[in-house]
Image 1 (spheres, rainbow, N blue to C red):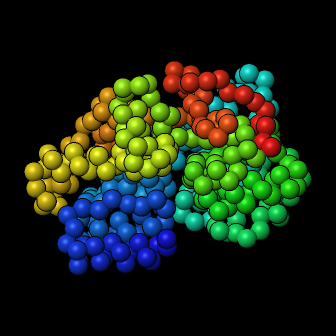
Image 2: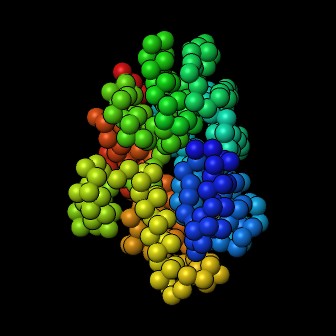
Length: 322
């Protein structure tokens, strides 16, 4: 996907297909351009997945976001790391490694700002070109400085390449954190799971007890697809369900009525397929009840480790890797 393609498709859907509302996109850079087209034409646009902080800072009246965002993740990582420090783990030096599109730049900036406020030292910031063919220079920079914590903000192909290159060059930090995205992709886990055992990640989904709403959705999804729900798929599903709820309450395909119904959304945690505290939008269109878990990769599965009230297992550190 590219921002230009997203913009063109949004325009086609609105002008030619005459859609009443839009849901998208995975990549923040595409949501940025596509939602601008929807705003210009007075069509509701809901993103269930894009987390760049600036998307809800544009003064848009037709834009809604159900997912937790970069500041939620930054606060979760900060609290998690401070708890690990209190437990005796080293967090005295932190590296931020991020791809240089809207997603990577925005999330890295938010994390750096939050960590500075919380007294967590970011000692390296490494930006790289998305879809790189070689990340050896970046891994060598990490190996030279040897930070206690490394946080990666990368899409799938880059995530695979970093995992391979770190193994080849024999370097790993005591704590390795992935900001979801490529590291959460089932293709990444299938290809590299055994290489990144103990990887810490963030997620909106960690399954549920049998009979719970998340478990019911997972059973339905697995029966159809053959795989379990993961973070991105469940966030996409949750956004769709929120839009369906708004359409039902609007009782109309008039875009203005759909927008008004979205603005009035007030869904409780008990109705969530994702692990949110509910869905309720502020004046900027952000879901103020979105929430995030911290998970750890164990034997090819991400298990909830934080916060303790929602954890299904204890964290194991230092990071094992391969």
